[in-house]
Image (cartoon, rainbow, N blue to C red; front, side, top):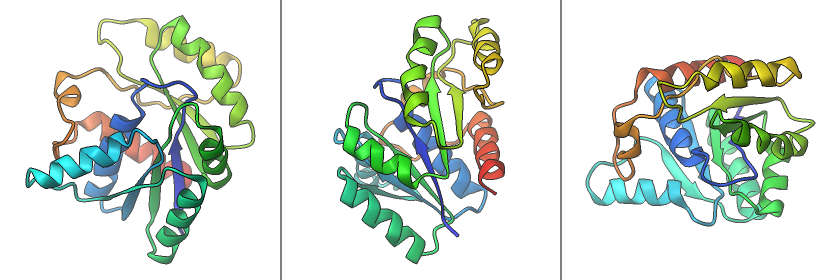
Amino acid sequence: MTDVVGFIHSKGGVGKSTLTVFVALALRNSGVIVRVLDADPQASTHRWAETAAKDGDRLPVDVIPTPSPQAVRDAVSAARADEIEIVLIDTPPGTPAVLDEVVKLVNLALIPTAASPMDIDRVWPTLDLLADVPTAVVLNALDARETAASIAKNTLEDVGVSVADTTVPMRASVRRAFGTNPPVPAVYRELASEIKEAVS
C-alpha cells in the first residue's frame, strides 16, 4: 500500500520544500521506499534534485514535477503501481486546483509554520482546507532561543489541533543544503519516524 503525505500551506515561504527533501532523505535512509512529487510551479524541490544530479551528488529519491491536478493523479497512480511505500508531495501556495487534488489524495497532511502569533494566524485557512484530512502542524525553522514554540503548541492543541512532537530548529547547514545530497540531522529522522507511525 502507498501512503501519500502532503506538505501543505496556503502561504508560501514556510519551508515546505526543505522539509519535503529532508524528510524524504530521512525516510529513505531508514529503509522506506519513498518518492517525492513537486506540485509547485516554482519547482524548487525538482530544481534541488536536478542541481544535485548535475553536480554529481544525486539524491537517492526520485523527485517528479507534477504541476497540474492530472499530473499529480497520474504520478500517485504510478507510485502505487511501482509499490512505493510513501509519496511526499510538496505543494504550491495559491494554486487551488492542485491543492484540491492533493487534499483528495493524501492520507496525512502536514502544515509547516513558524511559531509567531502572525504565523500561527495564517495556519487557520489551511486547516479549513484540510477539514476532512488527518492533519498535524509542524513547527518549523525555529530560532533555538525562542520560547514561542511551546506557546504556539499549547495554543493550537488547546483548540484541538494536532501538533507534531518534533519541532524543527533553523540551521545554517540546512539553509545552505539546496542542490546537494546533504547529511540528515537527527530532528528530520525524528519527524520521519512520527510520519511513519501516523500512516501505519
